[in-house]
Length: 301
Image (cartoon, rainbow, N blue to C red):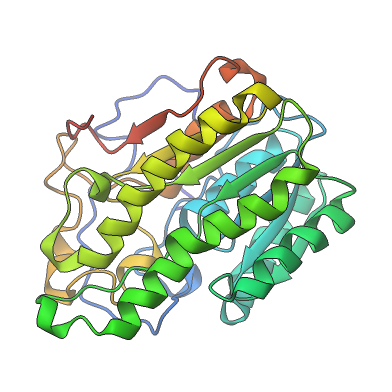
């Protein structure tokens, strides 16, 4: 989507800012790669314009190789932050591409492959990020696992446990490990979903974890507020990412993905990035425990 050169600050019609897509039925093995996705995503690599809002910040972003996490990593770098990218080893190809975009912005990129569903890796991840970045003052818990199952009888116990391990248990463990390193003024931003409010029956386990993330965000936000550490969340709607084609949606639903929103189209990852930048920057200093919905107009709490 490199033809979309207008940046996020340019006056434009949100209905037509990005084209309505009808993705063909396709499949990638989990976790999926951005580079193999049809059509390609827009992560802001050709359009996001920084304004110095995160100058000198040190950020750890999970799921930073592709989709929303990649868009956030690019935006953070162009806003002046150094970034540690957490991702699965199978996603190395995508991670290397995001690293190049960060370095083109003149910022440092630290690659930290590993599986955050493994409890021991969560604390190791934070320690490595702190050591490589020389500190930590921004954490974005974005990585997620989503596997569609049409019937609860088809939802194996192993998948239920794995989804919770990745989507909410890892957020708890990574946050717990990071908090001792976070000075006053630091931020944590968690990725939840429209699924927390309007769950799709075929995403029973995924939607349940996203509701838990909302609650965790509000509770942790209150706990850390007296220390000057702010915790918030972003709730995406239907965003076109590799998550959708690696069993995240029924294959026959892909051509209509996102068309039921008031804007009539799926969102692109770069459209999420400004929300994370806002919640990480000092501009949002009086915002705590908030979930910022970025979903194309679907009514939500």
